[in-house]
Length: 433
Image (cartoon, rainbow, N blue to C red; front, side, top):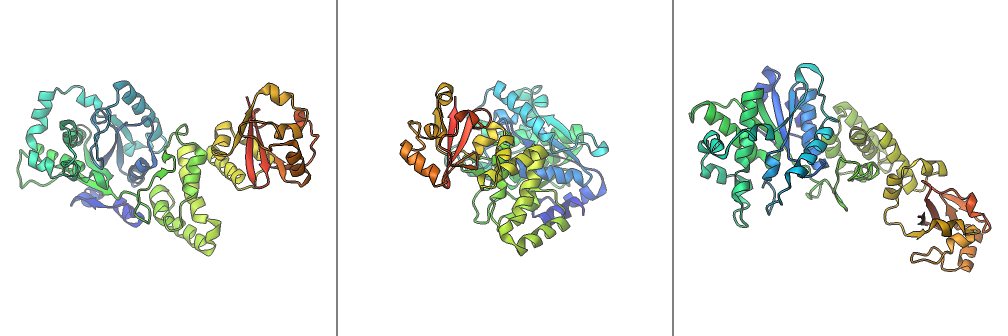
């Protein structure tokens, strides 16, 4: 399949300008997508457009990833009801460097003629004065044209600053600069970016053709639908907020769990957008899933592909092990294999008792340990703890115990500080500080 055919069957094509498909069919074409460094990590909303660049490269074309060092200083008003807070230049630079590293995980920067390139619009805007920009870009587009864009119209009631109003002109100039200096013919993005992108194509047409209204376009626009759930709500957030690609902001286990918990009705859309499985592979996965939906074949395939590409095979395997812990299939060996961050992610929200190392070492037996009085006590008395042990209702690190005299020195602490205590079907954690 060519690029457009690939997007069509994956449901990743929203709009494109006339002539786009013809341009792509006649030569290797350069296309770019911009990523503003408003955070130190991309999130899975960005991942949808990043997959657009990945599919573009796989089809033989040349992708450009633009990190918006300049546009990040202004903030895109598209889809926003209020103006963003400005970030300091130091924070923006830190975010830019982090995002560059993430982009390198997805695109091939050393594959010949269609190797990916990374650019930063600050590199050309830092050389342009305000007056020069007005002459270079401002004179070519009317205020009426700029106000017709949804990103502006939707903010007229609540107010929009001159800085945000000018954003589409700055983004349009990005396209013009890349067109002139890199030969880029296509800008892509989410469907909410259509107005900003077509501002770029219009700026190029007017500058290159001396404002000839009858001139044909030589730069093109293409957008992909914003990913939503089947019920129409926004996709990409968990209970704790955005799902980030940075493992320090969203752990690989939490990332894996986000995908594994998607509904059957959402999976067909997500597996086409976010994975690199072929059409035949996806159809086979879906056929197997429909045979036994309770086995969640589609969710597992989705979570595997995305987690490996974002975090690597080792972290994927660790996330699968951690999931086994959550659903009660884990052994002591599995628990010991989890790093501390994954362990705390799995048991987030589980009641926890903290005791000092000295208090732990001075507990003569298991009975004394699990009846320690604290703010989050496990058993409120030794008699209740003893009855639980005698009825085989207590486990340590997923292994049943009944010996109330078991020496504390013989108990294995996970990561040298945690003990997972099972109270029937409920978990409790002792943390030794």
